[in-house]
Image 1 (cartoon, one colour):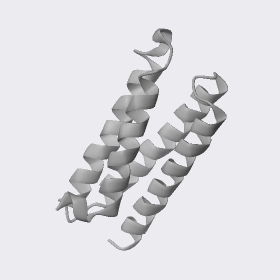
Image 2 (cartoon, one colour):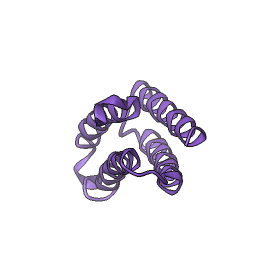
Image 3 (cartoon, helix red, strand yellow):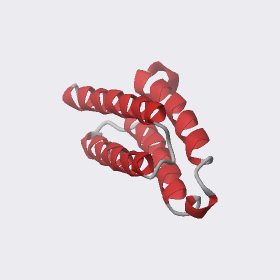
Image 4 (spheres, one colour):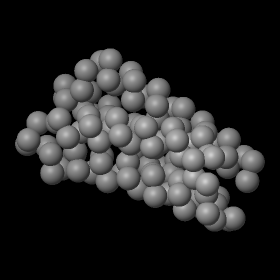
Length: 110
């Protein structure tokens, strides 16, 4: 059932990429920035699953948009601190933007 939702498939792959990326951050930030970003990423995955199985999903979708925006800011910080490359930043920005659009479309059609 979940696999029928393109946003689930997209975020599943995005989660895999983000978790692989943040685990390579410097040891000094592994339990702060890295951990928070991993948790937010997993919160989005949980929220997508909740929204799939809930009829009144407006609140959940708003919360998902908030997490996506927080991740955008966190990735901007990690790029500025050179924990990720320009290419990685461009890639994740595209993934987050696409997911944000999917959430917006889902909310519009709910």
